Image (tube, rainbow, N blue to C red; front, side):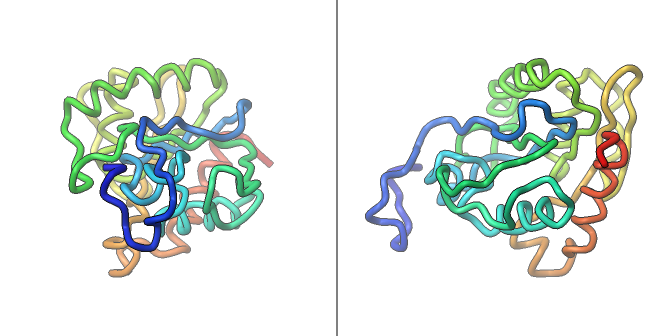
Length: 196
């Protein structure tokens, strides 16, 4: 995917390898997305960075006190997260933005390691049904709870999963996801995580 550059980025070197999660090592909120965008995270090397989904995500995280700024354009743009860590279920940009279950399953051990290292995650915000399914696999939840925007599934002795429509252009352009809806999810995540 790193060889197929968008004209606007033709002079940039694309990251073109697995994109790690990033954020606060003391995070109580873990945000799980789908996969890096071909010309976003795959280009910049930081998940949800350099694309419109990231603009929506970090705009909301800024408004709800998790991010130092409302945008994320490059790995070295100075954006810092407080109380949150952002990652993706699939770590490489999939063809046509449609990851296979095998890709999800190959990448989930990285999310599992991140969650183990973070140690005190109390809320997992799942951006879309794919991330919800991935989180259910991570925590061995059977039967899988029903996904919906604002759905919550607390785990005995573990975090609460929170469903959220993905901030994709399809969802934001059509009004299926609004800024108010996204902000409400992150406000609820703060409450569950016990953050001021």
